[in-house]
Length: 285
Image 1 (cartoon, rainbow, N blue to C red):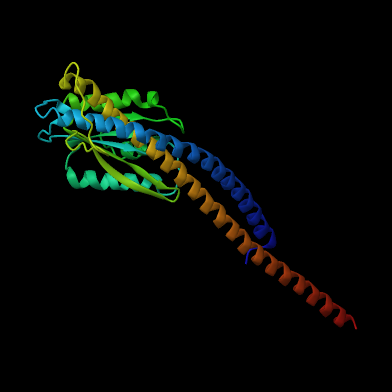
Image 2 (cartoon, helix red, strand yellow):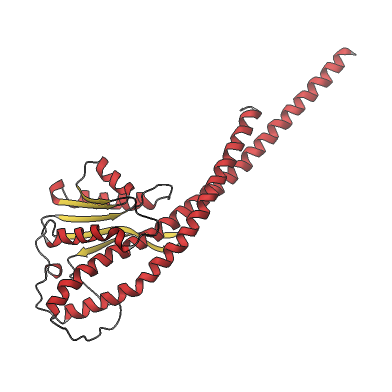
């Protein structure tokens, strides 16, 4: 059995760890509240731009815009959203495991795919496995603005338009609630299945539907990436808040268990001392 000093030292260190995890939980709760608000505030914009794009695309059936046309797939792009830090439960591991399984099942060569990594954890994961990372961005703020990823989003869309890859999938954690985040796969490009969230509105095009789509479609695709990033940030902070709460609760249980062991050991030591004193006194009589 460990000595009283060892048990006391472990109780003290566990209490200090519990204080750290409790503080991290409170910080993550504050960030989660803001991130959730950002993600929800972006939804009306996405619904409107989706409605406009769907309306224009449906009214321009003969459009040959490359972002609306499927082509033979020679190379696939994968945009993966993770965090820059750990301590977020299964937030990173779940999306990375799903992406890796998908890539391994679909491709036999690195020439058949390219990865766009948002987040240091995902970037390091693929680089350490010598996988083809074409674009990356790390060090994003906890409440990112569109300007933070605009260059990467434009490059991701531009690589598709240039024919670097023939389709682009996006993987991220979709925010459902503070305790539920679902790994989501979205086919970002080509935009062959644009579905409006509501009833289509009729628009008059000036100068023409094709010219409007030329400008609007890249913006729409970039907005999808930014919307997924906001969704992922809300999921990240919620996952980290939950993970830190679980760690704090586990620390409290461990402290209670160690305190019980400590008290029992201390009581045993006191009993042993009393027994020895009584035995010594009896020997002197």
